[in-house]
Image 1: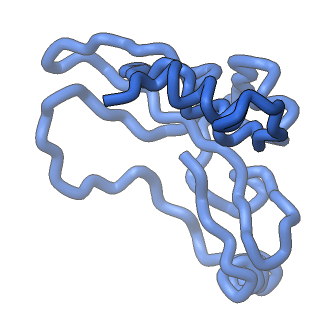
Image 2: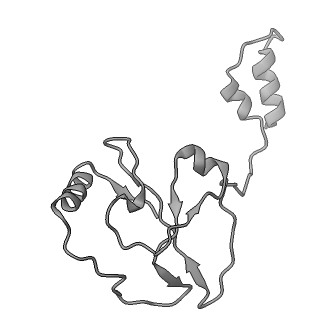
Image 3: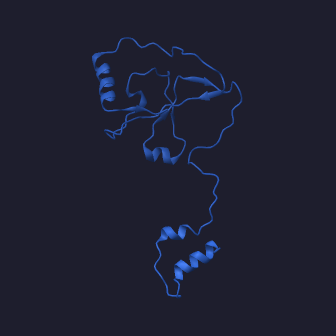
Length: 143
């Protein structure tokens, strides 16, 4: 059986020793395989114990239909008394993320039934139209 290095040498030199042009994708085959981990910028592992509070943050509203993002609180969602922006890394800023605090309260490994977060009075015609327009444009909430 031919080793990977010998096979690569045959590809580079050819059967008679002449130099061949090899696509770079083939050269990747010669690299060691076996990476078992990955790194996602801005995401670090965090350990939680049972009943530890979990901070749920909100992000922007995004649509694949319009490509124009909106801030989460541009619609009349339940909002905290003070909205605090979180910019955890440069990548979030460059992507246009608008990460902010929310009223949602979660605890690790605690089952919860549906709870009322807040009550919003009747929406005005303009507020209702804003929701209808975002739904029509396939906007999704990112949390």
